[in-house]
Image (cartoon, rainbow, N blue to C red):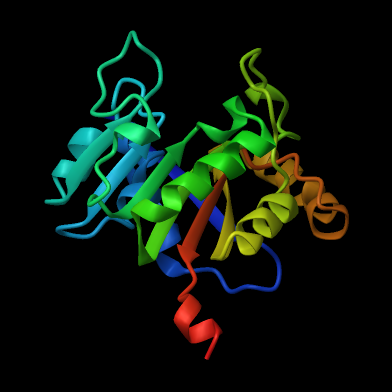
Length: 212
């Protein structure tokens, strides 16, 4: 099977993490930044799970997988947040290509309801398209999130947030040159024509530490 080199970089002002440069099989490569955050024995909720593409990857990490999708045409463990047992707490909650399909206030409402199912160190693992990357538009996309806005949203809800940029490295030197030429737009104006997706890692803040 052919391989693709997916490159990732942090927002300016942060050092790049070495594990973010990966070269793996095409099918898994897009999900690798999510899967790499899953630990053995984690309890994971895949919110908006659809056809559960992440299920096998997560179970291969010896983690417990639960799915939630409101679409009646797909199989999932839960159809609503209210169906989740009160005693069930998640270590990781995934929103993979989900938040662009719901509006801003609905996303906040979902996170507020999920808080009772979070541990102190629960992590949100989120991917969402970049509004400035022209090829990602779909009619079902209701809301686009700029990195600064989503970081502010999650910080205000009690999370420590890092946002990464995702793009596929091209073998064509001209394409990579164009990417470099475009970079000043990202750095100075926060208009990013290069990256296809954003990866958001948000860890729930330990409120007992922050209040001490």
